[in-house]
Length: 73
Image 1 (cartoon, one colour):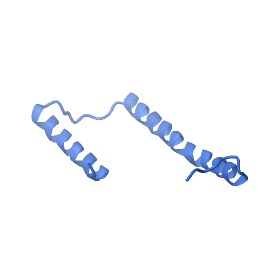
Image 2: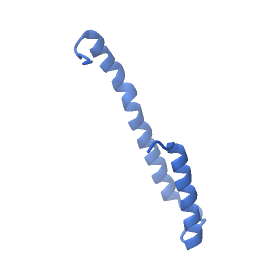
Image 3: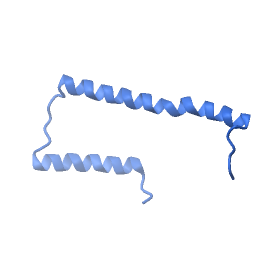
């Protein structure tokens, strides 16, 4: 639709907080230690997955320059 992703995410978060406050399902409690570990492990997983393109691209570039990969126009 051509909308800014950051704007859509911010609007979604604001609507979530408003809906949670109205229905009473949003509670303000301290995150338990187990949940903190879960969030930290997921962040570490995403960080490692985001490094894969940076590791693969140089190898693909070497293959392209060597002529093993032919780029179609």
